[in-house]
Image (cartoon, rainbow, N blue to C red; front, side):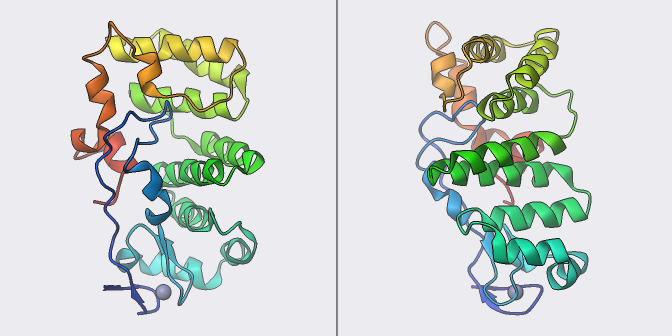
Length: 229
Ligand SMILES: [Zn+2]
């Protein structure tokens, strides 16, 4: 066990998701067995209501938000339980101007809504994630953003990001994913799609680099995404 930094309650230790063995979705949600552990990625303290991947590292500034922020309090009582920890954690990150974990937590809230078959919430949280998605020159976050817009039904925005990516220098896998995304956007498809569908043969070897994101990164996008550890 570890201890909540806000209230001192005993809380469960930081969860480490198992490495994914199956292909991720186009928005980089990892495949099984990591996929179905989503609900354990962000913990919520039953004592004080703070939320974080690691409750023992919540800062004094975060603690002040947990205690006194009206929006935080409203989320605690009104947010759907299946997504509440992600939304609380996203708000804490926003309050301290930390946009990446905030955006990722909102995307994770959308994934939780997908699992709960709450399609309107899923679309709403994807739009919120897109609205604060930081500008990036990296390819992977921008590919992810295309999928966020597409699955929210924001096809015009998805097409715009895809268009800008098409001007970038892309490796073979990224080019295949982008071509697949543009087709889906053109077809007004909002469904979940696997990375492996974009990378079908002959691009079988590059697939591997997208299949196991957790192992590829000690920093940067992947680390933030599967994060904490
Ligand atoms: Zn607590």
